[in-house]
Amino acid sequence: MAAMSGPFVPSGQQFRIAGSGQELVAVEVGGGIRSYRSGDLNVLDGYPETAICSGGRGQLLAPWPNRVGDGCWEWEGATYQLALSEPEHSNAIHGLVRWLPWSLLEQDEGAGDRSTMRLGCRLYPQPGWPWLLDLSVKYDLGVEGLTATTSVTNSGGPGPCPIGLGWHPYIAAFGAAVDELDLRVPAAVSYVSDERGLPVSKGPVDGTDDDFRVAQRIGRAKLDVAFTEFERDSTGRAMVEVRHPSGQGTRLWMDDNFTHLMVYTGDTLAEPDRRRRGLAVEPMTCAPDMLRNRDGMVLLPEGIPFEAAWGLEIFKI
Image 1 (cartoon, rainbow, N blue to C red):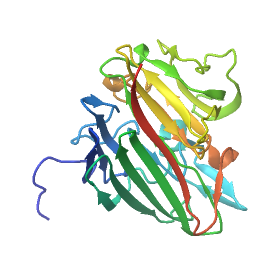
Image 2 (image 1 turned 90 degrees about the vertical axis):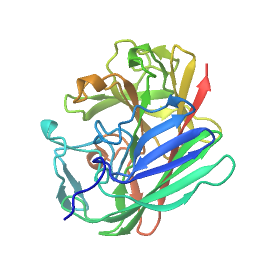
Image 3 (image 1 turned 45 degrees about the horizontal axis):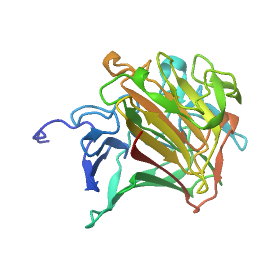
Image 4 (image 1 turned 30 degrees about the vertical axis):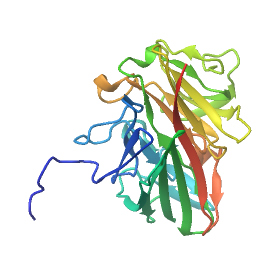
């Protein structure tokens, strides 16, 4: 086999769209976002073309986000064992598609203020997961910012499929540490997790350190917290805001199919120089450990797609 020419690109083919003063680069490996720029701002803390994706940066998470304790779960009288992809805590983490190849299905960099592309992936049955799933993600750049719409279809298996979707973008601190950011999360309920990152209880944020319903400085807080029960606007969107002292703000919105959210300050990332450089704000359609606790589980009949959308907007404070 002939050697590859040019630089080694661990994330495979790079898929680019640009429009309305923005540029997005998605990747073949996992179909996620490697970089997203608006004007001269790197909105997301991504990774270089020559690097492997680390810390889940920009990755799409399916058929479950977050963790499955011990990788072992039961469904309709059968017991399934997933690979322990977080071996230090004996968990299966962040689904099965983030290292699979995704292909470009369509692209439209039309004139004017809108550019789109759609990537797709087929997840075949495997040990611990008996369903065939067809997934796609549509990226849309417009004057209002970025929209990412994920679709998943149960294409075969032992009946209706339990499903969860998630995303793992890190909102950039624009060269600072997350300590300097103000955060607003309009959620009424948060989860308490154990040392393995598995939820053990949930309750109102009132009177706790998890209450970010009014924007407040992150400071030295170490966050790795799941939230739910959001205040939403008339369209069903929940809005999370991250504000920088420079007066720059980033707003992550999610539609009403995203019922949960993780916020992570990156304190346990493997590379010390990447810690607390970006704030992971992770839309999820379910709670952590969903395949075991059923919290937020979506049951997907064969042939019926499930779709969920989130997006990013830049604003001035």
